[in-house]
Image (cartoon, rainbow, N blue to C red):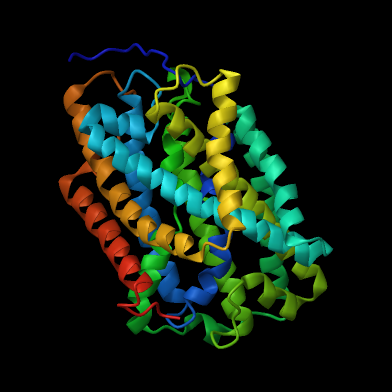
Length: 407
C-alpha cells in the first residue's frame, strides 16, 4: 500500500489538545496511588537502587510509548491500541491488547474507588462507601465529557499535585531535614524486586493513542514532546516522594503509605496535604485510564460513533460500574486474579508496540510527519521486550509466592 498524507475519521473523532494538556494526561495516567507505596517497596534496596530503576524503566517505557506514537501517525484513522493491534498484527493481537487494557484499568479503578473512600473517611469522617460515591461522580463526568475535558481537568489537577509535592518535599528538607545516611544506603540484593515494582509504575502506554488524536499535522511534534516531558515529570515524582519519606524516617520506620510517615514527621497539616495529593493522584489516573479504556471499548467493539449518547452511556457503564461493585464485593480472590493477569498484561505491552511499529512501517499507509529514528534499532527493541517480560514474570512469581517481594 502506498504512502498518503491524508487521514480519515472513524468512530473516534479528532480533537485539539495543548502541549500542557498532553503532558498532564501522561503525568495523571502514571501517578496514581502506587507512588505512595514506592518508598516502602524500596526500603530494603535503598533509594539509590530505586532511582536507578526509575531512570532505566522510565527511559525504555518512553521509547515504547514513542513506538506507539509513530504507529498512530502512520495510520489514517484515529485508533486505540486494540484497533492498531487488529490492523497491524491481527485479531488475536487485538484481543490480547484489549484484555491488557481492560485488566490493568479495572484493577486500577478498583483501587482508586476503594482508596478514595478510605481517604475521604480519614479526612472528613464520612463512611467509606459514601466517600467512594462522592469520588465516583467527578471521575465519571470527565470521562463522559470526552478527551478535551479530560485534558483540561488533568491540566489543573496535575498542576495542583506538583505544587503539593514540592511543598511537602521542601518542608521535609527545611523542617526535620533529610538524613544523608538514609539516602545513600543501598543493598543490591533487593534490586530485582524494586526493578519489577518500578517498571509497573509507568502505565501511560495506554494513553498515547488518545494523545495522538489530540494533535493535528500543524502541531504533530507536540505528541513526542508531551510524552517525553510527561515521562520526565513522572520520573521526578517517583524519585522525589520516596526520597522525602526515606530521608525523613529511614528504611526501618517508613510506612507502607507515605502519607502516614509525612503526618508523623511534619504534623497534621502534612496529613491533609499528603492525603489531598493522594486523592488528586487517584482522580487524575482514573480520568486518564478510564478515558483510554472507554475509547478502546468503542474501537474493539466497532461502535459506529463515539458521540452517540446511548452508546456512550453503555460504554461508560462498562468502564465505571464493575470496579465499584468489585471494590465493595469482598471478592479478594478476584482482585488477586487481576494482579496475576496484570503481570501477563505487562508482557503483552512490551511486545505489541514493537510489532505494530515494525508492521506499520511496512504497510506505509500514511506519511507520519515524525519518527522515532535510531531509537527503533533492533537492539533497543529486543531490550524493551526482555525488560518488560522479565518484570512480568518476576511479578507473577512474586504473586504466587515463588519469589521474594523484597519488603
